[in-house]
Image (tube, rainbow, N blue to C red; front, side, top):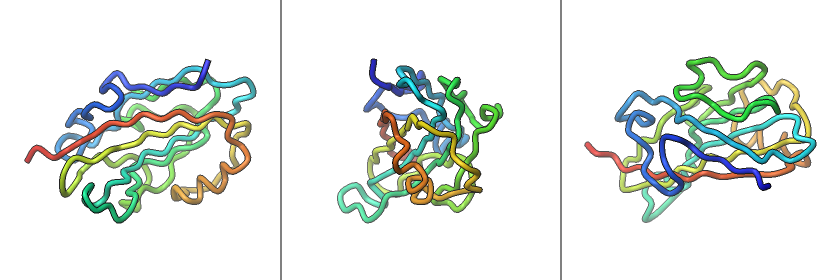
Length: 158
């Protein structure tokens, strides 16, 4: 069974509810996964937007969330993470708002795509502090057993 990632808040390819965006409460969406391969020791998650600032002329990937060392026994993240707290041992890196934790979609122009990428790892990573996406991906090198992805979209309503 392949590794899969889903959310009870939105279907793959559908609009992310406003509560999870800058027009809402910036709550992270609930996520659930299954199908971790044998040998999984931990999970990492990155959420990003490859359409910044304008989907018609993207110039960069904006990182919304960086998580690592989610325990191998975990199969979900509750809405609003890290409130309630993240699973024991999980750590957050820096998003492109230069702070740890989740920052919700807030596209300045048009409808953007937001990718939630889950990595099943064959190791528990050392304490990386609050790594950037690039630093986390470098630490993941050689440890990824499987990857799953969930994409949602958002366009500001105001």
